[in-house]
Image (cartoon, rainbow, N blue to C red; front, side, top):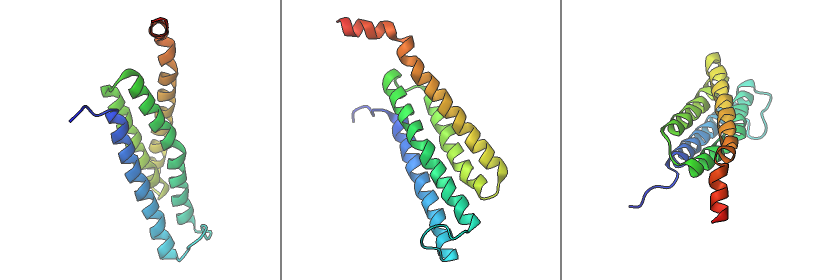
Length: 140
């Protein structure tokens, strides 16, 4: 078997796909229990679960893109595995917090924001820090 390309990105994306399914199932469970087929019916529990899934959908794509592009640019690194794992854990804690366990929501969003800002900053620095290498490639 050939080497796996972008293993961190592959694993993180798979985990996020499963989280997204889990979030959808949680919404479906409330919809069935409360007999709400469309909209939120003003149900606070359903609204919280819908917001948790939307919050996930707002952050996961950009974080996964950043992980993939960083991994493509610099290769697979141990710290990138740790960052991806922290993001996945944060995205599990956040909806648990939205169901009432306050620390989960706070920790989940704090870690998500730190990961997003950190990856964005690192990704932005890659072209700047490797400008000499890019020049060499373009000249050759």
